[in-house]
Length: 92
Image 1: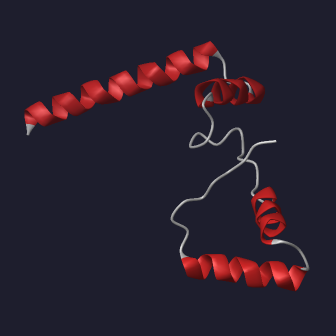
Image 2: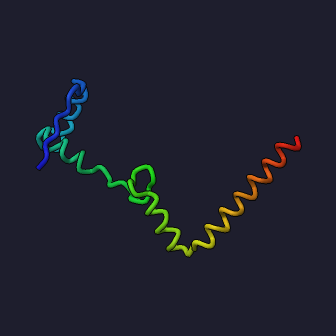
Image 3: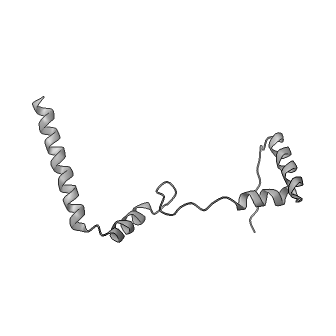
């Protein structure tokens, strides 16, 4: 099993953890293990936490039926809007 050393833990935090451990009838170490064990797993599809967010996004798009043709049409629309915007910028 892994070990974790927490440096520069404020004294008041340690005291609060000790009191909490006493209330639960366990050691400080057991209390901290319990607290850390309650940390939720990140949602895999969350781009802020997933290292493979692009793959997750592509899989979701395939799942809902987005095709390469849909992507091409979207890219075409974006390019057209950008061209129109440049024309408007020039006219003003």
